Length: 169
Image (cartoon, rainbow, N blue to C red; front, top):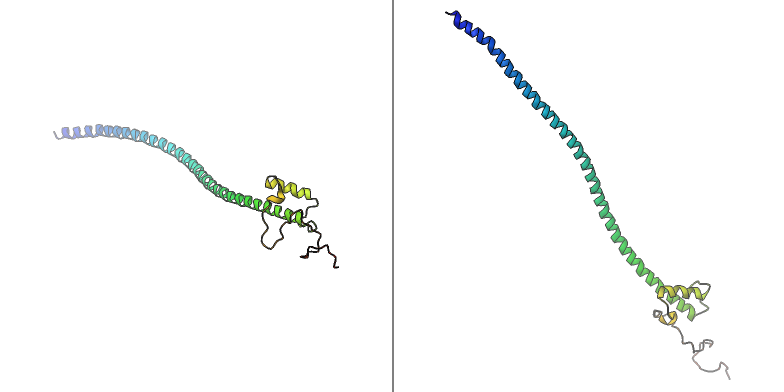
């Protein structure tokens, strides 16, 4: 009688490991399937990381482009102010050219404009000044510079204050 419970335990022990082994085998298959899914997900994550790295490189390029664009806008603003200064300088030089041509026409022997022909100077100032009579439209000379004499006044006198004919009798 003692043998019956032992025999039952031995049979149960022999049948029991088969169940446990089958359960372990099923669990291992399930774990392997989950690991395969995790491995696939990690492969997708690696692909996504590579795409993100490429995207970050593009974004850095865009940031550089934005900073270059800001620099170009700054330079453009500076060029606008330089252009304005050059326009004012051009206007001033055109006015100075008129003044020099007026002095040349008033004092013909002085010729400070450097032009070989008087027509060239008038053509240049005509373009810059917009046409018209350049001699009368010019700016007034600063104090201390000679002013233009009227065309009817004699210019051949000795520069004296008398109105005589030049003889001393």
